[in-house]
Every structure is written in C-alpha cells, then in structure tokens.
Image (cartoon, rainbow, N blue to C red; front, side, top):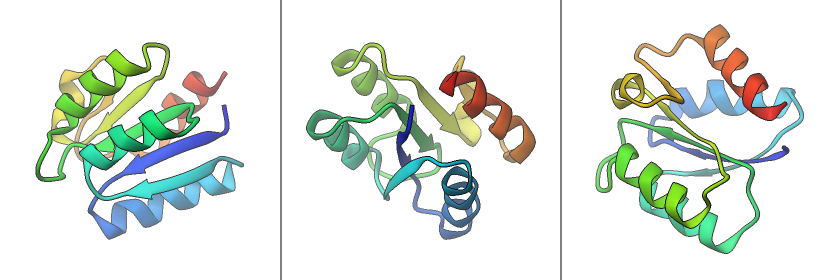
Length: 108
C-alpha cells in the first residue's frame, strides 16, 4: 500500500498528517472536500482514503459509504468527530500515535 488520498480542509491537520505519511514513504494526494475524494477513487488507483470529519458539503460518513460501495476492498479512515462512530475511525482530538498505529495496521 503506497497511494493515499488525504481529505481535509484544515491546513494544520494536512501539514501534520501529510508530513507523517510522506516520511513513512507513502504517496499522498490531498483534496479539500469528500466529494473530490470520491471522484479521485473513481479515477485513480489508491490504496487508502483518509477523510477528516470536519469538511463541509458531503459528510465524511457519506463519502466513506460511497467509496466503500465503488471500491469495496479500499480501507477508509475517518478522522475527527464522526470518526469515533466508524470502525476504522479516529475520534477527536486526533492522537497521532494512535493514527500511526492504525495506518501501519492497515498498510500491512
């Protein structure tokens, strides 16, 4: 697993998570809106989608449902408030160490 979509409109969150993912050797494409993450999944070859629960428009949960329906084997991690409700979710505030463990467990 090397290609990840990171979806967030929070520049600080993108900076921290993007930096960690790049340091770990992942290729990361960033988008601001969950609908764009869905489009990228349809158009590209990605291994994982990470969606921030904060974006406006399509919710992170809705985006995860659509992504899972069009790419059933693709893991989706939701970060933030909605994340605690999802089996592969991360609650708020984001614990970077827990996030790292989650990504490494999915990537194996």
